[in-house]
Image: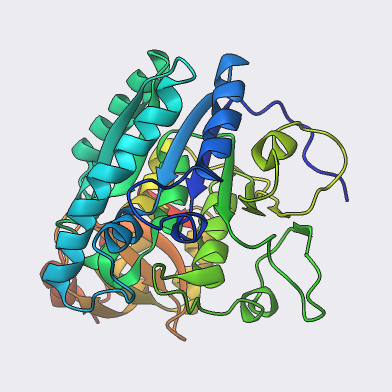
Length: 359
């Protein structure tokens, strides 16, 4: 199978903490591979590309500066470590890009910035304005205040959400591995469907400075491909890896390419499907599931159960009778209102078809 023959214009690159940990004896770190990555990004920007960086490493940086051998477990210690490391992380990015005639900007995001539609659009407009000005956005989860990110460490997911936020043409996730390996330890070069068998090949990380591992990278690639964006998992230590990936040649290199779904989602659909956290769950019968998959609205007569608490305009998960999620939608009624009409024979619209995205 050939690589996608496309001239990628806007590219999101996620840089994993695993690329940094080995380089951080103390504050004088990141000489390689971080400097090499910055050089590649600068080359692409000068060639007309728009590059957005999602960077892990705040906690890893803080651990190095504070001479910690193990990742702190107490929340306040994690947040303090991140606060020390984030400042240093940005100073390194500024140094590397300034030497190449470029400016960079720090953008710290939390889940609240994605949940709230107005804040979501504001974040999008800020990043797009930075790109318009020729400035490299350096995006990170706000580890100093965000408890959920620190618990899960999912900057892989954040990178996929950012790719959808800015309507990226490509997502590249850089780590210290060459891609997803099969049972024979060979790189799987192209994946067109993320099946349970593919997920079974991933295993959690055991690195002290990182969390998430390959499974979170696969889940991020799924968000990207379901949004119509191709994704790549590659080794950031490989020479000129970003330049190799973005050439758009017909050959497949030593990385894993996740092909996008044939149907692209609109920016609003991406937000409904992935950008906001589901506040609750609506379980529907087979008839309702079939209707939704045929672009019909969700009516009360098809609802089997309501789980969790949500209000009007909250994003909710929609599951079948086996409680397998197959769609998400923007609720037209609250959970309390919906519970009152369960079992009644009349059909009340719960979610309009324009506010439903099939996953």
